[in-house]
Image 1 (cartoon, helix red, strand yellow):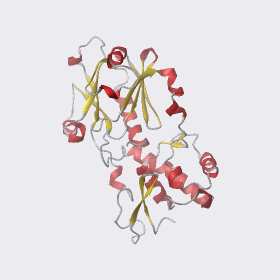
Image 2: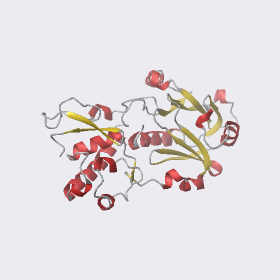
Image 3: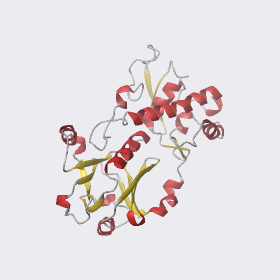
Image 4: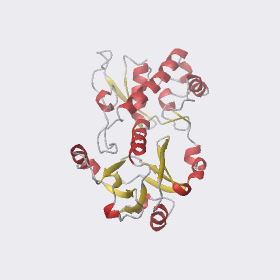
Length: 296
């Protein structure tokens, strides 16, 4: 599932490429993805809406439209959004879009500056490729977003300026018996960190994922906090991690997978100490990777 850096990359791309465009039409061959309206109502209500802004809350994408509407998208396991400029697709984009992972397009928004255009002549397509068809699409009133149960339940965003070390320490110290590897994945406490970045953060901080919060000293807490910010920022700069289905809006892979230190590298030798073996254990039914020598 795309985590904070992947979703932020998509949001950044959308803000650069589709702001100011109008939705001329919408097509889908998997109408079950539309959760709160019938397909006919969704298609009718989204037409002629202008795209004003795109933002991220946790791992959720919100595309704010004219007339007080917002398109709410969750990519789930294998979903990713592709932007195709019908007037100028580069050779590299053509190559990317032809990759198998980008061929599972089940939804298309037809975009143009002119709302009167026929969809066959639109300048831009926003396409939704989703192999497993688990993704969610909702059209809702913008004012209602903050009242969504899944949004109200989210903890502070890992990249929020208000998420400082003091806040992090407060979250941890209220849960002395909890394991740090579990806490970092709890979206109700800290939103955005998933399985990939949990493993990488704890590796760089030198902390074993099964350590209890009550056993961590202030220095270790500080190291974990610093690595949350460092690794997530670097992953955003590198356009995310494409270890499976994730692709950016040009159909290209992220680059952070090229510098992973532990995630899915179990059985290999640790790149930091040169002697420990990368191990894998299950925590809350998810795999976490670590070096038994470096992480204590």
